[in-house]
Every structure is written in structure tokens, then in C-alpha cells.
Image (cartoon, rainbow, N blue to C red; front, side, top):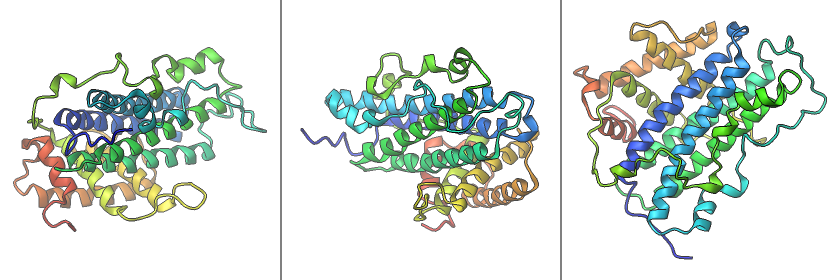
Length: 327
């Protein structure tokens, strides 16, 4: 099998795709966290959590599909692409959920998300959020012939982790909703297996392949989201994310979930109300992260015009450590 390098770094059009899909994914993860809140017990947490989990999984899939298309154009064969996408072990939402031994829930019993399910949800969100800056950092490297592997591994692993979360939601509701309802909530029709990628039905950036460095202009919120991701990346740099049992370490999970909650506070700082209610403990952590963000932005953008720089420059500054950072 020939050894491909696929160039010195991720092509500019894929960088643009990575930026867009990362922003979309973060928004979906926020919504999953939002609708899991007990205060929304009567607002259909199951339906909305399944919708947004599927949306996050599919959005990451769009980026994987973009990279698969690039590999195909660069000369990789279908079997090599399947191997790189780990298509033989993907976790699909279309797999009929298995009943959890000894578990039967009535509609009344799951009006509020069970605490053990909420724990699995927080683990899954942390798993994915910790991997987004890994992929973005690879995308921003000026020279990196290994960018395909560095980017694909965290993205396909994230898709599978979200797939398992979606199947868990469905398994908990087997005695509450019919198969057709669960299928609709999981958005099974729109899922595209990695085994079929690249897929002609995907949303491709291929028309931009020759654009060069894109002058993508961010708004202030985008800058804050990416800076928060960079801060999370720094805080967890070198730390083991999972314990020996494969579960997310509490410190890592709390850091990631705290970052998602901080984004709700950041939105409130823009003059809006928080997107969802935080507990006292969550509010304290989110405020601490928000304070650190303001300090970071003050060092990186002393003229307070953080929204007036190309987003690619913002990303490079964030993931190469802004002035006053550690590296």
C-alpha cells in the first residue's frame, strides 16, 4: 500500500470546514446540556437531547466526509479510506437499541433525566469537547504531514461516543415511545455511515480548494468560543482524560462541562439571558472560567477589537498561545 503524506498541512478549504463544523458542534453540545437540565423536565428532554446529539454526530460526520473526499482526490483507495475512518467499528444510531438488563421506565419515571443517564451524558460531552481543540490545533499547524491521522482519530471517536449516547437515550425510552417515534427523535434517516464516505450527498467545501488562506472574519462570540476551547486545551494538556475503567476522570469532565456552561455565561455577557439555568455549583465554575476568558482576551486583544481579525489568525493565536500564555 503506498504511503501518502497528503501535503505539508491541512488544505485551506478544509481549515474553513473545520472552523464552521466546530462552531456548529459546540452549539449542539450546548443544547444537549441545556435540555438535560431538570428544570426543563416538562419540555421534552428526551426528544431534544436525541435531536441535538444526532445533530452533533452528523456535523462531525460532515467534516470527516470532507477529509475522506480530500483523501480520495489525493489518490487514496476506498479500503484505505475505510481504514482511516475506522468504518469497521463505527457506532451507528441506526442500530436498534438493546434493552438494558433489568431496566424498565414508564413515561412518568423519566419525566426528569435519571441521574445515571445525566452522568453518561456529561461524560460523552466532555469526551467530544476535549477532542475538538486537538483537531483544531492540528488544522492550524503550518507544516504537518500527519494531519490526517491527528484529525481523523478524535473526530471518528467523537462520532462513535455520540452514537452510543444516542442509543442509550433510546434504550431508556423503549417502554415509553414506539419504534417510529424513537426513529424520528434519533433522526435515523439522515445518518450517513462512514463506510460510505466520501458521500456525494455531503456538504462539501471542495469548490474552495484553491482559495488559499481564507480571510474569514469572526464575530466576538466566535472568538470567545475558540479562546475558551484553547483555554480548555491548556488546562487539560498532558493530563489523562480517562481512568483505568475507561470513564472520564471527574476533573476532566468538570473542566469540559464547566467550559460549556461558561459559554452560556459568555452569551449573557453579550446582553442576553443565559440559555439555560445553572445550579449554584455550575454557576461558580462557569463564572471562574468566564473571568479567565476575559483576562485571556485582554492579553490577546488589548485594543478590544477581537472581532476585527480574520478567524484563522484568531485560531493561530489561540493555539500557539496568546501573549502571556505558557508557550
